[in-house]
Amino acid sequence: MSKIQLIATTPMGLEAVVAREIKELGYEDMQVENGRVTFWGDESAICRANLWLRTADRILVKMGEFSATTFEDLFEQTKALPWPDWIPGDAEFPVNGRSHKSQLSSVPACQAIVKKAIVEKMKQQYHTEWFAESGPKYTIEVSLLQDVATLTLDTSGYGLHKRGYRKLATEAPLKETMAAALVLLSRWNAERPLLDPFCGSGTIPIEAAMIAWNIAPGLRRTFAAEAWPIVPAELWHAAREEAFDLLRDDVPLNISGSDIDPSAIEVAQAAAKAAGLAKELRFSVAPIAQVRPEGDFGCIITNPPYGERLGDEQEAALALRQLGVITKPLPTWSVFVLNPDTHLEHYMGRPASKKRKLFNGRIECAYYQYFGQGGLFPKKH
Image (cartoon, rainbow, N blue to C red; front, side):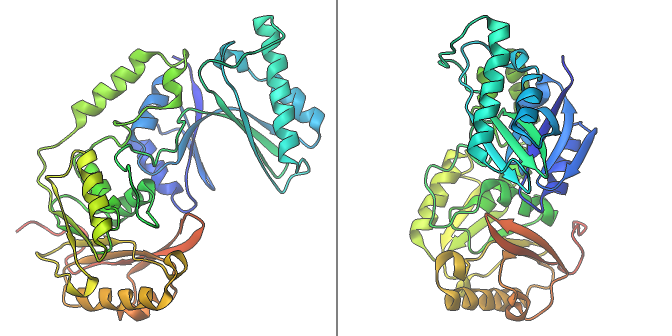
């Protein structure tokens, strides 16, 4: 096994959540930066990180990092990296790029230079002048930030939010990775009821159920690196076997979702069925004013519609007021709301216990956290 430096990319604000997930997988040698967590592992870490990380966007292999202020710097230092150790002679290897606050500001030019450097390196290894690029895909990214170039290989392929259970989507769906983050940040556990009264396509209830049953989020999909010779098929098989062994589908669940839109509930039910959770989750059509949470010490975790997201600010504000009304007589319930509206606490009729800045896509939001009486982990009675 090799020692490989990996990068888990993450939405801004979720770096600590991703770092905690990585640590729980057993990888403790890590560095947390804006938008990414860098850690060390072996080839099996590529499999396990892709299968298990709920809140990361992608898993990248860090091929190299260096200062680059000229195209010559970029070419020579890219060429010096061990590309043939990873990329076989028949591989498809497109190059993507980003540049921010760097002298090399032309992204197309940087992509072309990196591609040329890698081709020159591979010519030396494979003794050929032409690469058909008909084999497995190795997506390369050159990212320039303040004149420092980072070169990576994408092991995930599709973003990790694509779990495989959501075939359809509502008008403004919450990404699965963000939904999982909201549940993890709430510290909810399966002993407590969970309700999402603005459930849309059901992503928060489904992700909560997957967390409660310890279902690896990547079990129902494939990854780019599954086609790479350097990551043998037996490692993927072993990682999936581990995930099946750790699944806990005997844990009783009390998770429900509601939405005013009947078509959204149809999408949610279809997604729950695709996730193998149709019998465990309850979805119903109901406006927020008619929602009546049942039981004690429950959690409401929700992402209400935004005016700027769905186009009606008055309706969005009314929905938040109604959320405040239905939660006021629930002193033991904790309420967690992701929303960009700075007046949310006014609409809820009380200040939040805690707030955390998060980004839902490109929309800056706050995660408003209202802790119910009895604390986050009440004793069972």
